[in-house]
Amino acid sequence: MQKTFSIIKPDAVKRNLIGHINQMIESSDLKILASKKMYLTKNQAELFYKVHNEKPFYNSLIEYMTSGPVQVQVLEGKDAIVKYRKIMGATNPFEAEDGTIRKLYAESIEANSVHGSDSEENAKIEINFFFSGSELV
Ligand code: CMP
Image (cartoon, rainbow, N blue to C red; front, side, top):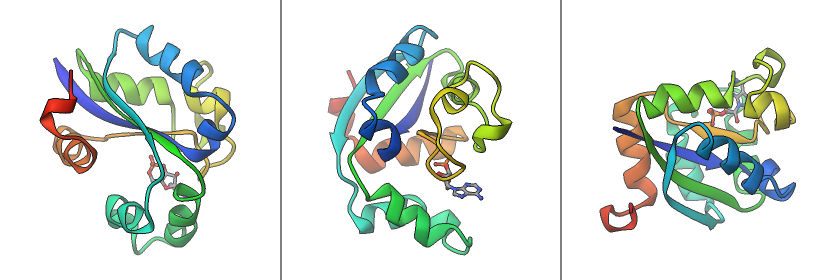
């Protein structure tokens, strides 16, 4: 069993898509161990996305991620990291496969509805950034 970290981003929360996205997650045999709705502070968003701080889209990304509430979640299942990235689809929704979350729901490469960890190491860091061990049930 493996854990991964997910964010349902402001564009999707705004459009009432938490339930639709979580249905896709659960029907793919991933368990939602923890889930909370919150506003990211500017500081949290900057820290979370600090690997992108040299990128041209960084400032816009921080503004977007703090523009409304997000749903942060921990998912668990067999090969959860790869499985969730498959369900999400490509970062750019125009390149995402049919049936993926981003193909169905993303508005743009920035407002792409969901985030998922890209490695086991980052999954640990991202989970610990938002949740304590006792919240994962
Ligand atoms: P995410 O998977 O959360 O990782 C970085 C985020 O930056 C990405 O999803 C998008 O929301 C955002 N982003 C904005 N522009 C770009 C871009 N040109 N390439 C990649 N990511 C982008």
